[in-house]
Length: 305
Image (cartoon, rainbow, N blue to C red; front, side, top):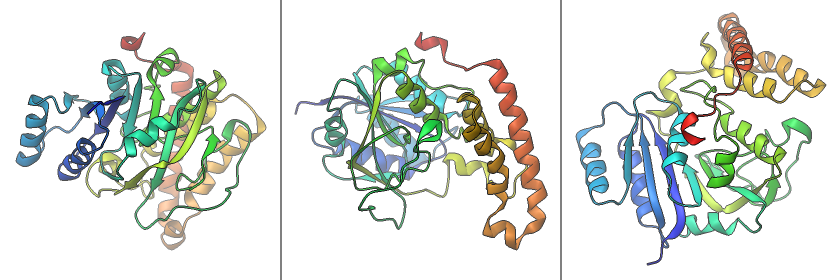
């Protein structure tokens, strides 16, 4: 069977059986992708997972890349550097997919100025959202776009857990900014989307390209614990850094000032107010770190230049 001109890239961390289930589903797609890259940041897998990944790699069903330091933007940059196909599909490692999923992504590239296609994401218990959705304008447009929408649309934001890009266009933009602090790296994909649209590209939302996100309890960003009761800056630094990178404006200033208030105005903190000072310390630390990163400048990987 003729394969699609598509590289599937899956960054993974701390996942075992759910990862192999995801790979199995991709291998069963018709038509198949030309290439599947697994950028594996897990120090040690269980014996069954290690055996299956080793076997698939030996059979050239996948290309298994080991990486020591976990970072989602850096892992995806590795995949972009090693991909051999003109289109690269970035996926979460804990998903289910429908038949024809891969082909649906490429169907979204309906014009040359479509540089990215973003698929529908259904979280556990969600159904597709039918009908028009409210849309924002300006530098913060689509930050709250509901990716469970059932309506095709032109958007200016995307989620890297279900996103296909024209490889050469993304490489020309510098790919992902590795300043977005791992392991959370919040907003790193939104940052790329904003740079893409400013450069003249367009993003197509393609609900036919649907994933069912399983939200596996082990691994991924859940390895760093809850953001609700943590003074760590890693949960917020990406959001502050992203906002600062968009330039000074009243809308951006309001966004920055509202974030710490929004983060403590939750049911969790209403019931446990003693965590509010802890969370605000984390927000302050995140802002300071974001300002430091902004002064340093974006970290685009040299290996892609």
